[in-house]
Image (cartoon, rainbow, N blue to C red; front, side, top):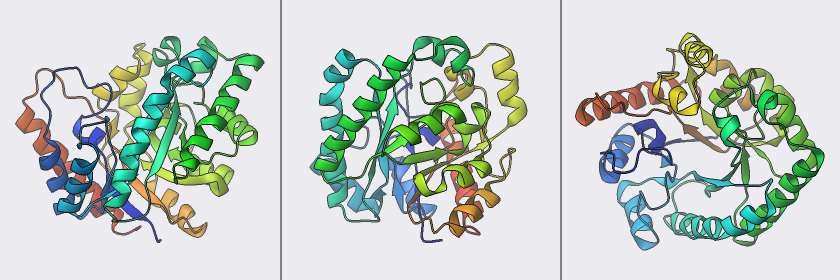
Length: 305
């Protein structure tokens, strides 16, 4: 498989929902851990975490890592809110340009995602039951995805769209509808598809020709079911141990990778093990465990990539 493996800040507890002011691993320590574990790239993480502009480019060059992509969450079904959020997209695109200048690996893919709703985020995997879009709102979503895609392409990048628990593109049926109604290809996220009742291997057969980016996760199904049965939302999924090191969960990742290889997949493979550090866990112990998991994940991938 001619894919390139990247790590992600979310695997070290650094992402948009990390509590403000929380102590986290430094970007240099994270990138050093990934480089030492033979990752070729890194996801952007929260805007500014890895630095911006020349500082971002220089940091990537120093550690020999490419920029794989980065999360850009936009309220696609709300025209007014979408227009107000476009400066965030353009700010992210400036950082993708800086990352591309580092010259390591394929170009980064701006990873578009819907903002969802508070009702959906509180009921991951059950979004259609609690907050479904009507036809007009779905039309706004697809129209605004097209607008965002034009901005991304005008900046010299190809967009990808991330189906995600807690958003309006979550379930396999919603992904089907999205694929039919837009020309933006998909980020297949094996973990979030699992939450929404999908089968990642079946997803490769179903949408394989539209998958241009991969977020690879393993899921402890028993842990996930406990969280959802207790009424947990996405914060509880992230902090409840649902996403585990490769081989410790219930997703047949080897078969998923083989199926993608058979289709000639050549993009980034972003290893994501979404975690939130609990308040009772010391940072040093947390970082040590996360670094060990990334070694495990990279070792598992050697047979596939």
